[in-house]
Amino acid sequence: MSNPNGTHGTHGTHGAHRPRARVRLKLTPVERKASVTLALLFAARMLGLFLLTPIFAVAATTIPGGNDAAKVGLALGAYGLTQAIMQIPLGMASDRFGRRPVIVCGMVLFIVGGVICALASNIDWIVVGRVVQGLGAISAAITAWVADATRPEVRTRAMAMVGGSIGLSFAVSLVLSPLLVGEFGLSGLFWAISLLGFVCLLIAAVVVPAVPRAETPIVQVRPRDVLTHSDLLRLNFGVFCLHFILMSIFVVAPGLLARLGGYDSEHLWEVYLPVILLSFVLMVPAVFYTETRHAHKVALEIAVAGLVVVLALMPLASKGFGSTVVMFVGFFIAFNILEALQPSLVSRVAPAEFKGLALGFYNTAQSLGVFAGGVCGGLLVSHGESKVFLAAAALAFIWFLTARGFRQDKSVTA
Image 1 (cartoon, rainbow, N blue to C red):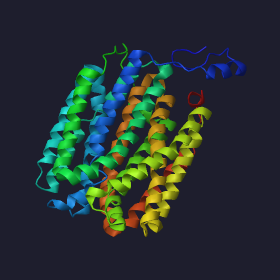
Image 2 (image 1 turned 60 degrees about the vertical axis):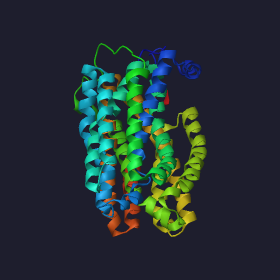
Image 3 (image 1 turned 90 degrees about the horizontal axis):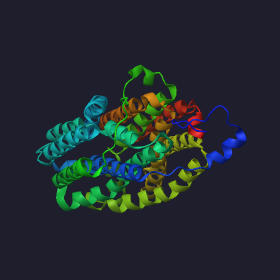
C-alpha cells in the first residue's frame, strides 16, 4: 500500500509493485482547477519577464545607452538579482500571511516596475524598472500554493504543469516579442508586460480557488537541511546553469540572427516561430519516453550532454544562417526538456517536511542564473560572440559532470 507520502509499505513485493505502478490517480476537480490556474498564473508572469529576452539586445539600440552591451546584459538580468534576494523571504511570508496576499503584492511590484521601464528615457531607468520587477518574487509562493492544493500522490503532475509552463512561456515570447516591438516599439513592449502583470494579479486575486493550508507550515526546517541534500544541490546548480546559459546567449542571439538572416527586429519572429515549433515536436518523444520508462536520470544526462554539444558547435555554426538555426533547434529541444524535468525532480526527491523550502531554494538558484547570465553575457560579448557560446558550453559541461552523480531515487522511479 502507499502511505500519504506516496512511498510503498514494507510488506510489498516486486510482483505487487508492478500492477500498482500502472494505477494513475486522477486529479480532483479542485486540484485540477488549482493546478491549471496556478500554471496559467506562472506562465503569464514568466511570459511578462521573458518577452524582453528575445529582442532587447537589438531593440535597446533605439534608446540612449542601449549600445552598451554590458548595460544591456545588466538590464536583462537585473530582475534576477532581486528575485534571488526576495524569493525565500516572500515564500516564508506566504506561509505566515497566506499565498494569495503575497502573490497579489508581488504582482503590484511587477506592474510598477514594468511602468517604470515603459516610461524610461534611457537604459539606466530600464535597469531600475527591472530591479523593481524582481522585488515581486512570487515563484516560491506559487509552487507552495500548488503543494497546498494537491495530494502528494498527484503533486508531481501539478508541479510538472508549472515547470512546463516556463518553457511554453519562453516559446510564446520568442514569437510575440518581435511582433510587439515592431508594432509598438520598446516602450509598447513594456506596456504589454505591465498588462500581463495585471492579468496575473486578477488570476491570483479571483480565479485560483482557495484551498486550506496544512496546519504545519511548509517552510519549517533549517536551510541547511536543504543545502546538505546532495540531489537537491545538483538540481539547484542545474537550474542556475540552464538560466545562466539562456540569458547569456540571448545577449548574442537576436543580433546574430538579424545579421546572418538579414532580419530586422520586427521580423525575427519568422525565425523564432519555426525554431520553437520544430523543437517542441521533436521534444515530445523524449518526454513520453522519460515518463513511461521512468528514465528521469537518463533524460537529465542526455539533455545536458546535448546542451554541451550544441553550445560547443555554435561558434562554428554561427558562420552561416542555416546552421545557426539548426543549433538553436537543438538548444530548445534540450532547454524545454530540462525546464519541465527539473522542477518535477525537485518535487520527487525533496522530503515532504521541507518540500516548500526546497522549491524556494530552487527558484532562488534560477533567479541567480538569470542575473549572472545576463551580466556575464553582456561582459563577454565585447570579446566576441564565440566567447559567450564557449563559456556557456564550459558551464554546461560542469553541469553534466554533476548531473552524473544524481541518484536514481526510489521516489523518482516509483
